Length: 80
Image (cartoon, rainbow, N blue to C red; front, top):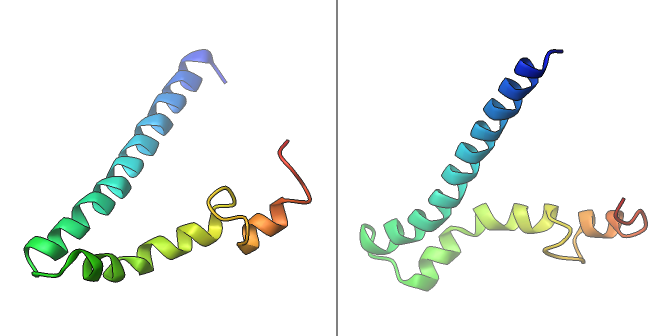
């Protein structure tokens, strides 16, 4: 693989990763505001509506919660 092709692949992969992260965190910022302003929900009700988006991430991220299944399976292996 040539150097130009590797740079092109790295650049396009970085752009895709940036766009996906931007859309994910943008939605996490704007959805509670949408629920509060448009639907008239309280802050607590808006967060309860978004629990279905946040709980899977907390279960799969070993650094976020050491008691999760992913965290417990990663502890014996350690960081390499």
